[in-house]
Structure formats: C-alpha cells, structure tokens
Length: 334
Ligand code: MG
Image (cartoon, protein in one colour):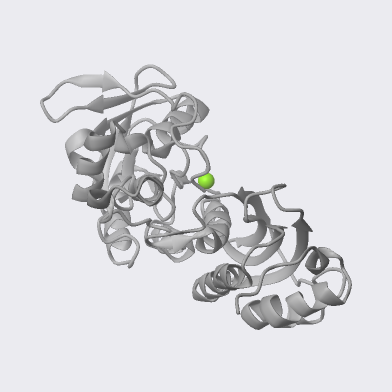
C-alpha cells in the first residue's frame, strides 16, 4: 500500500521524529547531524565561503538528476566558484501534505548520495509540511559553507584584458532536459541534465594554474547571461567564438525545434573559467583530465572594447552582441 505524507510529520512531535529517524538520518548520517542538537557544531579555521539557494524544479525527477541532486550540486558549486572546498550543508524542506513517501525518500536518497560523492556533510536541517495546495510537492533550501583555499579568490570582478575564457563542457543540457521532461516530446528524450558536483574540478584548475581570475557556474540564464555579468562586473568586453562552444547534438536540434538559444539555457554541472593567457593551456589540460571537464574548450577572450559588452563571432564570420536573458525563458528549472 502506498504511504503518503501527513500534516503531522511537520508538527515537531512524534510523527516528525519518525520521519527524521526513518528517512533523513538514514540517508544523511554523520556525527554532527546524528547528535540532533539544536545546531551543528563545526570546527573551522581560516576564511569561509557561504551560499544559499532554494530549489523548486518541476518535475521532481528528470533525465540526469532530480530536485535532490540539484539541491546538493547547486549550492556546493556556488561555493566552489569562490575557490573554496564545500564542507557542510544545511537543508530545509517545505513538503506538501499528501506527497507519496516513496517520492520523498527518492529525493532524500539522491541528496545523500550526491553529498557523499562530493565529500560534503548535511549537518543540520528542518522539515515543514504545508496543507495540500500550499506548495507543489517538494521545495528545498540548502545553505553551504566551504573553506577557502584560493588566494586571491576568483571573482566576477577580476577578468583582465587579454585573459582567456574556457568552458568546462557542453552548454544548455540541463535547460533542455527540463524542457524535454515537461513537454513529453519523444525526440527530445535524448536530453540529459548535466547536474554534477564541481568542487574537484574547480580545485584541480586552481592547483594546475595557481591563478584563476574568474570561476562561475552558468546556471539560470546560461552562458550568455553569465558572461554579461562578468563583463559588467569587471568592466571589460568579452568575445567568444560560436564554433568553439561545445553543444550536444540533442541540444542543438532540440533548441532549433523549440526556438530556444542554447547559450541562454541553464547548466548545472559546468563552469566558466577565465585565466591569464599564459595559463590557458594548463587550465584546459586540468579540466580535460577531470570526469566533469572532458569536453572543456577555450571559447573566447577578454578584450579591450566596450565595458560590459559580450560579442559572439559567428560560424560564418559575422559578429553579434549577446545580451542578458530578458525575463524567464523557463520557470522553475532549478
Ligand atoms: Mg552560481
């Protein structure tokens, strides 16, 4: 018989304890969490990086990931972009009454596995259950703390004229996978989210080069929006080569069918890295040696030009400006 989540499970009483014991402790178990004190005790020294994000993706499960993998990868990737090793996560669930417990368990198991694989501990959490209709199945917030190893830390403000721009792999996979899961269009079924932890990749790039000016994960708004943010923050122009940008065939054909531009589609397991020109080959080599950077490529350069501008050199030799994403191309993609 299928079991469903009842309002009691968010009451803070026995039903809450049962849910915590039977599900969260089982999948997330670690010393700090298992104590079940009011807060987790952490031992830290040196500078820290902290980030938070909420996850509302619909549907909950899609090719290549789930709301659970995103809730772990999304937050640890943001911390990793600061040249920090993510160590601890908090997680807060807003759950809808009537949710099948099997679905919740699958999400929780995905989170536990993603955290273990990335070497991160979920050390504190919270669960609220709201009446049917007050939210859509599962909303998750995760916050994370990481220990900074880079000095100086990579920043969107640090791109310099002459620097080289690299992408760690194919663009647009996550956005198209969500679109495919929602539309049910059969020929899009090859689309797979790239949901992945980038802490190892970020660290290996830093260790290989010793100097990374910018690291950023092109999530919502995609590559084009991320590059616009960097060009604005650093007051530089960035020029990229269309032919050099890795894009999967499924994403190319899916985008032309749906009228979408892959450069504006979200990624959940890719990073953009900007380094001094003399370190570009070292960065590329380090990226390609990592399981999440095998298709890394040099895609462009930081130029003296109009500050804040991003230009795309097209395959037929033309040049067009890439603006920021206007409005929401796809709601609830992460
Ligand atoms: Mg980010």
